[in-house]
Length: 262
Image (tube, rainbow, N blue to C red; front, side, top):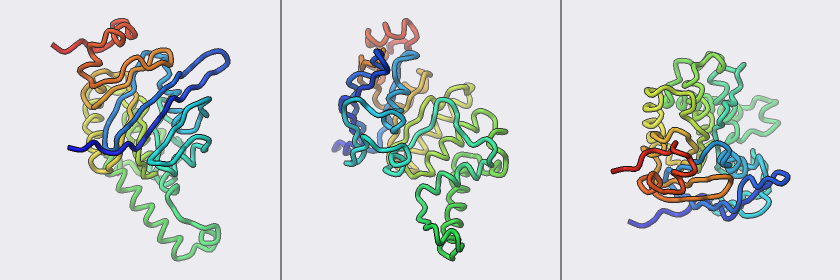
C-alpha cells in the first residue's frame, strides 16, 4: 500500500523567549489521514509547537507548510482558513453564547458573505445563514450535543465543553486538526468515549489529526506514531510500542511513561 501524501510538513522550526530556547529545530511530517501524537513532560514545549503551527507565535527559523501552502508569517485566522484548526488546553468557548452560536460563529469562516448582501439581507445571504444553521446542528448531533444547542456554553459539563470545542474546530472544515489535551479533566468513561469519538471524526470528516495528550492510555491506544519533546528538543519519534520502551523517553518522564509492553 502506497504512503499517503504529506499534508503538514514542519521543517526545523525554533523559537526563543529571551534566553530560553522553548522549541529547537522541531520537524514533523504528517501524512494525510493519519493520527499522530506529540507528548512530553510538563514544560516540554508541546503547546508552544501548536502556537507556532497556528500563528499565535512566529518561528525564529524553519518552515511550516500545509498541503503545499507556506504558513510562515500568516495570522491565526488566515491559517485556519488555509485548513489548520485547533482546540486549546484551556477551553476557550464563548461562555455567554449558546452552544449553537459557538459553532455558527466558526462556520462563518467558510461563508461567502459580502457586506452588501449582509446589510440588505439578500436571498443569497439568507440561504448562507440557513446552510450554516443546518451544518452547525449536524456537527452538534455528531458530537452528541444537539439536545443542548440552546444552552449557554458555560453551563455545559466539562466533558461536553471539550466536545463543543472539537465541534467548533471542525466547523472550519480543517484539513488538519490539532487537539491540545482533549482528555484533560475527563473521567475514565469520558476518556473512552473520547477515543471512540476521535476515531469517528477521522473517518467521517476525512481529517488528519495531531494530538497533544498527557494520558498515556489515550495516546498509546489511538496514535499511529508519536513524537516526544523534552525541554523543546525532540528526543524520540516512533510507533507507540517503541516509544513505550525508549530509555530516553522513560528518563524524561522519570517513571511517568507507560510501562513497556511485554
